[in-house]
Image 1: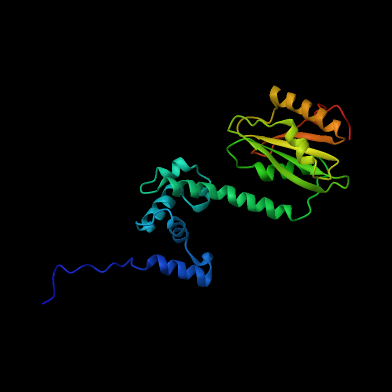
Image 2: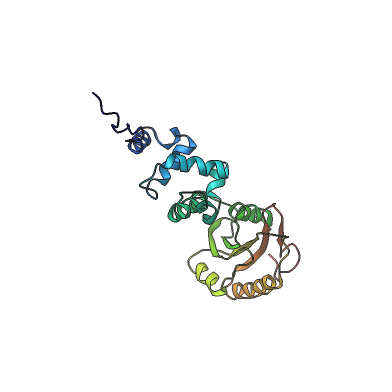
Length: 237
């Protein structure tokens, strides 16, 4: 007579290995979004079934894109998500953006005017919830030799030292530079602090024979303020 108290069959046994095998044989693109997410959670939640957690995350944030562009604290608020898992998921957006910039850096980019500079800078600052400042180094043929993230701050500001720009230019064959930073809220109108920074940078670059082609202040909706076009840079190209 069979034991009525015999153990139930664990239908999830071997599930993780099956998911990994599927990825190994066919790549991650064959997985559904919830399967990708549960796979990403494996190292951070080793003792629980991550399938219901993945579904909870997708139900909360709607899709993978929104999820990875959400801050870690909000992700951590979903039941059974660990702090390490939340931090990892929230960092993926930054990783993907850096890969995109690296890929773009492998192609020749020409910055011929203020409009070109604004377009490029919008592509690397759009969607960020903190202020960042970039320097684009351009040669006489308008070829961008390098693009540097000079600093990042918080939602209200980003400070950077003038000498750090000069050090970067020591290793780059650039005749002029475009500098740009984003405003996460409000208008692209520069602050007095922005004005002081621009004057100091203009003077410092001039001392090493490099032209500050422009300083651009950008917003997420595609607007920008140009110091050059508003006549606030003393030199002329």
